[in-house]
Length: 153
Image (cartoon, rainbow, N blue to C red):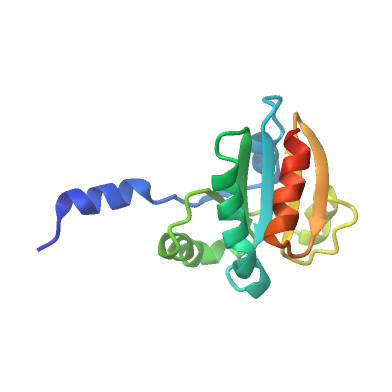
């Protein structure tokens, strides 16, 4: 027999994937609210991206009492939305997960950061409406924590 209450609670805690364009992403992270937005670009098929995700989960927990928000931006194809949703559900990801549908990557990658080669994982940090840092590559947990700590002080 299915426990309806448990199923209802589980359904309420799932993070629905929203498809956004670049302006939608910027409208979420370019804020004047003194929050540090840690925006990680990843994909389900990117092994280094998946391997470093727990570092972002841990950082979100560690800095939960501070103005820090971790957002995952999937670069999977929009056709793979169900794959991304299953990935998020299977791993019980609590942070916001967005699926970027921004068109030609040769255009929007340069808009994110002109130094970005397009490789993932990549992470940008925004605070008070300004980009604080763009980082292409994997983090260690210590590197990520150190950057976050330096940006919230």
